Structure formats: C-alpha cells, structure tokens
Image 1 (cartoon, one colour):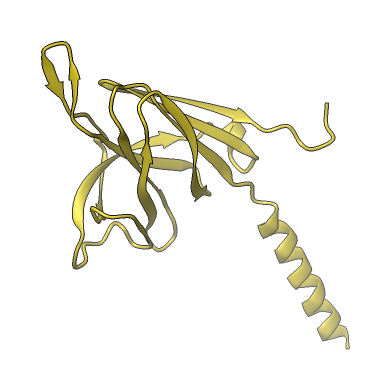
Image 2 (cartoon, rainbow, N blue to C red; image 1 turned 90 degrees about the vertical axis):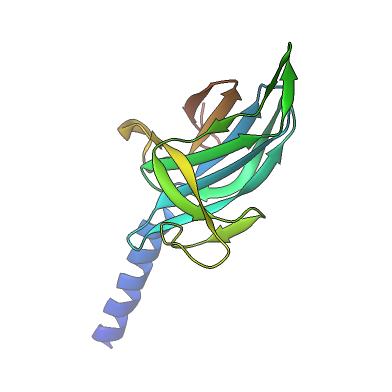
Length: 161
C-alpha cells in the first residue's frame, strides 16, 4: 500500500511540474505589401519540432497555432512577390539553421533530418530571455522588408492586478 501511495504521489508531482511549464503564444505581424508564409521550430532532446506554413496577409497581425516550449524559437518566412516602386521584391527571413520542411503545410518531429518530400530551409533563431523562460508569454514577430523585430511580453495571471 505504501508503494502505491508513493507511486500516486510521484505521478501527481510529475504532473504538476510538467503541467506548470508555460507555453508561449506566438503572433505574426506582416508589414509588407504581400502575403507572407511563416514556419516555426524548437529543439527537443531528440531533434527539432517544426510546423508551418501559416499565411499572414499584408499589413495584418495574427496569432499562429504553434505551441512553443523551449529557450530558442526558430523562424522562417517567405513573401509572395510584390512591387515596391519600380522594383519587384520577394523576401526571405531565416539565415542560421537549416531544417527540412515541405512546401505544403507541415507539422512534424525531427525537422533536422532530411526525409522524402522535404527540402532544406534556413531558419533564424530567437533566444528567449532568461526572465521569460518557463513563464506564460506572448512573442510577437514583426516582418518588414529586410528585417524582423521580435517583442516578448509576460502575460498577467488571471485575477492579478
């Protein structure tokens, strides 16, 4: 009986510890005159978890359904072609880490390994400041021609002031 009580107590403690890990909400803002397509990834013990492509219309902000849990968030984005003055532009954001993705929507583990139907795509890295790790946060990516601005804010707990 003592063993079963110990096992139950251990299971409850593990659930509370794992359940208390805060996930970050991710918001994407597109400040160019064309639709962009965005993907995200984070590293796990076994490799990289990656998902994409979310479409964000020109001059729009929207949350994406990506459960980020970690200390570094990887991102990649591509724009559709657009005209700026006399120039035709097409932007890509991502320059640090090569991950393997598909052209269509995807959601899979081990994105650091090539597999049938994938292609390499460069992702940039955003290191979450230590003060925000493990806390409920919102990370906002603002894509503009030639650069990305990233802001992070902690969320207020419910009932807090």
